[in-house]
Image (cartoon, rainbow, N blue to C red):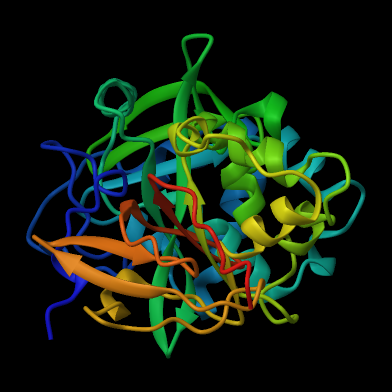
Length: 337
């Protein structure tokens, strides 16, 4: 059956210069290659990165990241300073952070491609803002790799919104090694929730305004629910700003609540490669189901009221507690049932 898998993931892959076939962090590069100065060589020589080195070395039991980042290949390491880890820990000991959480946190700082600052900025000029890290969640026993949002703020490269928005800024970008690049950051790049993406991506500012408007449920808390706690994980179909401006009038009160709930499916992390022509979704938080169709390799959604022209324009933006797909129309539920 024809699926949306064939659709171009416009904002997940970098055009031309970067493609990510897989973010599995494993040492399957050319073993015959020779490198003089590796990423690990550089970070071990930097006295401001000793905490990062300590944590990476402690990972050897599960995944020898140190060995991988010392080997021939193409990698990008976002390297938080010692002070960044102190801020992240906020007085906790490293031993208080669950091992698996720490493992995924470290993987969230690694891209299995080598990307310098100029390439990140060029991607932004092409309206590309998301990239996959080596961190992942398991969906049906398959890895779905977590995204970071990147953009330029004040001429500095920022990740997941930058320092002032709960993310990180590259204070020393483009430290080149023979097997990739290091970007030293002033904060730890934490694993993002769905809310984090909606908050930092300006294309969702109207959606954020609706979610946080007076009289609405606490959607921020709801959509920040940890993945193993009901109703997470979520699949969110997120209208971009132009979808709201196209409305004759934006609903308010209880009507707005139902509209917003109609964009969220609880208890499911639905990747687009699982969406097929004619598929019916599980019930949204509002109660109605969605119908999917594929036309000319483009995915469309039919909402509860029968509108069938909402186009999926950004695919598979994976957070730690669910997944976001951006759409170009606001979905309207059935108001008669």
